[in-house]
Length: 176
Length: 119
Image (cartoon, rainbow over the protein chains, first blue to last red):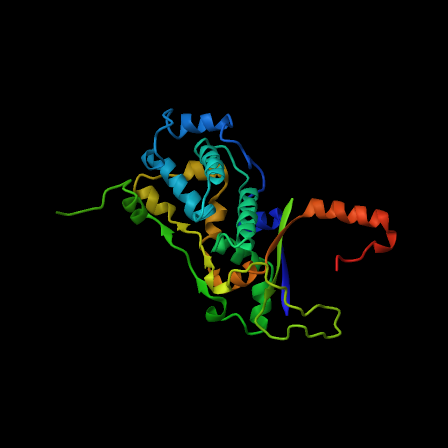
């Protein structure tokens, strides 16, 4: 017995509670003019600046991107280019179309999984929210199949002061 | 517009079982050769914005511009790892617009197919 689930951009927008509007660029070349804006705003005009050396707020935005939106694992140049643009949009207060980016990220990851190239499943929490909103959890509960053990319930890590310390954005407090 | 779809295995057996309810009880076949247990579910981190703010990392304006706060609220909920894996091994991607175009072309060739499913 199975329950069909279809995920579209609209479904993701509803689950992630963000309107599907704003900037979205995919399959861009490494010479896209906006990459110069990325260099200017994020790298402060110096193309040789490493991402670990950028300004603290921008490093946190990058941390959000890799931990909260598009989880790492098997990246490529193509992805790093579009991630640079997303980072630029975030840093420049230019609203991105998050549901569309998440949809493309999921589609890419599923295709990689089908080809046997990728074992990481991104957006575990978002998919779980879609299952909840799609009444899947309700159906499982009615059939007494929704124990935490059966569902494999977990919670994610938290980005907080410890993260700032680990990233060396702030120093650890030491009384001595 | 792209779309993902899969049938979620609810854990009961009965592959191939046919009951006259008009519904299919076939479990959707897996779409990947990777074994289910080899997959690793990545759970998004939630963010303690108050803790960051107390330590001179105020991201309120940047996040407000993106209208991201409801998204971060959503990230505080639980993740169902086993359900996600069951979904993922059966998921496939198709383009809704391209599928609709194909359907219209097929129906134009043979009008008796109008309203039929792909199966």
